[in-house]
Image (cartoon, rainbow, N blue to C red; front, side, top):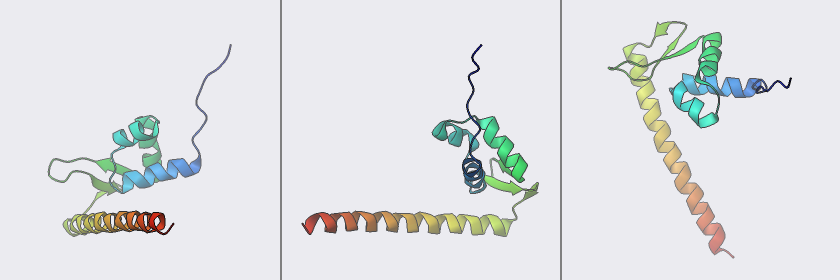
Length: 106
């Protein structure tokens, strides 16, 4: 009888999933995006001491070692996410400008 199973995920992949959950990504969305089961992602996060808890008042509050984020930490996290979004937008603009200049130099 032939056994069919998926090979174990690489340690780098598992660590990346844990970091994405820790940064606020939803495990359900990650499982759909990367093609692994949501329970695997949740198990890796539990092993690393990271959980994702979704509340109505504060969606995506990161809980690490069962300690919820304080108000100041949530506020700082929101500010950092805004800054990250701005920096990513600037990066995208620069990448497009670089591509445009490279194509017009020929």
